[in-house]
Image (tube, rainbow, N blue to C red; front, side, top):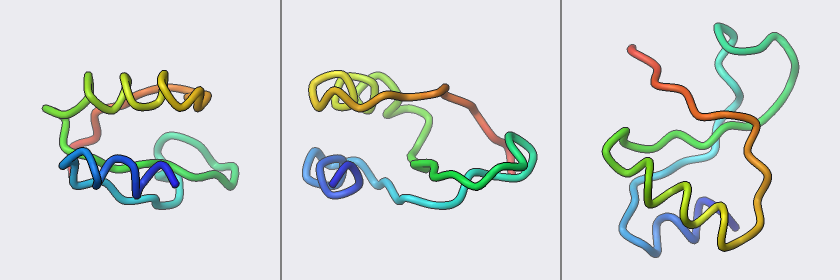
Length: 59
């Protein structure tokens, strides 16, 4: 639902496994362009989605 909501707001987002360099546990992350961070934070707040953290990851 979060991915679909982001895409509806014009954000190229996708749900993916949490990268190993952030956590060794199983979990989900939402990948999106860094410049869209404030909009993604707003959407998460509006939808009452708990976020463990935001991270910039260089490929």
